[in-house]
Image (cartoon, rainbow, N blue to C red):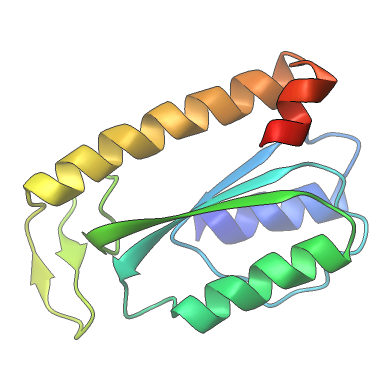
Length: 131
């Protein structure tokens, strides 16, 4: 739900949102007006967001004129980045985070911090092009 709210806020109040990071979420909405760059983190084995849905959302964001970076974390399940929260596998089974998910959660945090630093603290134009 947080990913949906973040994307909705960025589209509804484009001058108020400098960057968006969405974890696990997919939103089928009108992205017109979206100015903020978007980073999306997806679990590979997610019953709630298919690879096609993630690709479709990425395409719609780009068609609206915004930039988007997508990270699909191999071997992970829905909620992989949240400690203390059970993960949900591709078949809807609930379980505990594994070593792969722990590592992916750390990688996602590092990628998110770098993305936000770049877009909110004003990285150089060369940095933005390289991403």
